[in-house]
Amino acid sequence: MNIDEIIENFELLDDWEDRYRYVIELGRGLTPLEEALKTDENKVSGCASQVWLSMTTKFPDGSEPTLTIFGDSDAHIVRGLVAILIALYSGKNITKILETDPMALFERLGLKEHLTPQRSNGFRSMVARIRSEASAAQETARALS
Image (cartoon, rainbow, N blue to C red; front, side):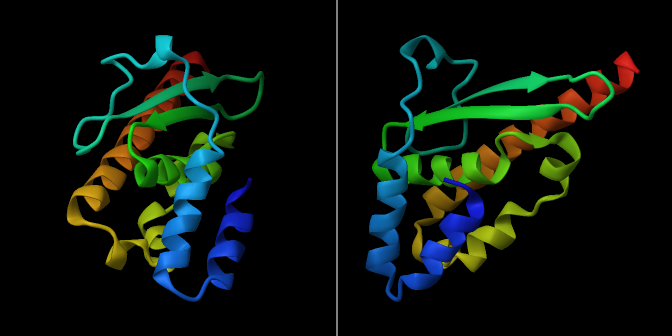
């Protein structure tokens, strides 16, 4: 599912309980991360629950690098947040990733006001991890050119 579909679906849901269930449903639809990728290196620090993000960067000839993201969590709602971030970022080029404001989306979807501070901090930690990977890929691309 792409991010535009997720936004549309959120807009159709009037109350927070329905939105909460939808986030959980998004997490259930997420392909589980292979156990071999659930490593300390892929674990996101700053999250109350366990979250893993595995990212690969493609450096196509003459094009800007793109980032592919896989993720998982042991908590249902957080798994849904991972799914939202994957829909927002995965497969996008590095510039697009670094220019996108996920916190604006977080607020637009009403997540900021309805999630615990710990989950909000976890969301920010996941975003920071993705942006760090994108920045590293950008530096690698500059060194290769």
